[in-house]
Amino acid sequence: MNTDKESSLSNTKIIYDITKFSHLDYPDHLSCIVWFAGCNMRCVYCYNKEIVLAKNGHYKIDDLLSFLRSRIGLLDAVVLSGGEATDYELKDLCETIKAFGFKIKLDTNGTNFENLRTLCEAKLIDYIALDYKAPKNKFKEITASIKFEEFSKSLNYLVQSRIDFEVRTTVHADLLDEEDINCIIDDLVERGYEQKYYLQNFRDTGTSIGSLQSASKSLESGLLSDKLQIVMR
Ligand code: SF4
Image (cartoon, rainbow, N blue to C red; front, side):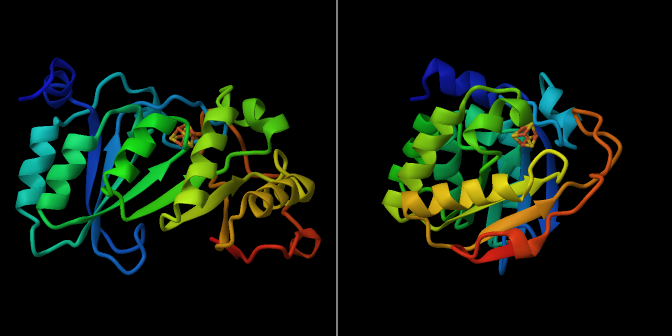
């Protein structure tokens, strides 16, 4: 039987949009992307402003499930993104997605630790892309949130649980410099992270939350730490 919380979730339009096909977002997989409405952060470089600020989306869970039923055998994975997907309790949804035979990738800022852990402990997530937004001393400036400790719990949990995941940082070089990136790398190494570390450049779409323009400089790769393998996207 559904709890009140679960049934109100399925009756609410929590999905902003669905990208029906992507072969880029989950490498080596044909996936669709589910964009959940709303986010608990306000990153200055975020270009998904409409999704982040949306009170409601356009689709209910049932709409998504109808779509996914029609894609069985055509896609092999579902990417849960947003906004921030873990702002919602997604265990039931993920169980249904898995029952359909899809893998699940989760894009997350890591600041809803309990929801993340629930999904991972139930073995519902196949791959996670975790945003490491900024070193602790710049976290609030970049994200307008004070959730570094919650993010930190998620990062430790993922490292220790050996779940397949990557860490990535969006870089606007006027906001994060080489010293900041090296600080993140040192922290990752100290916690036991050994995988690739992805840096993705800020994209100037003219619509970012902080109305940012392109950075006046680029990171100097020669000044970056070699303690982890860095991959530029
Ligand atoms: S970039 Fe920041 S504000 Fe935008 S969706 Fe991700 S966590 Fe939310």
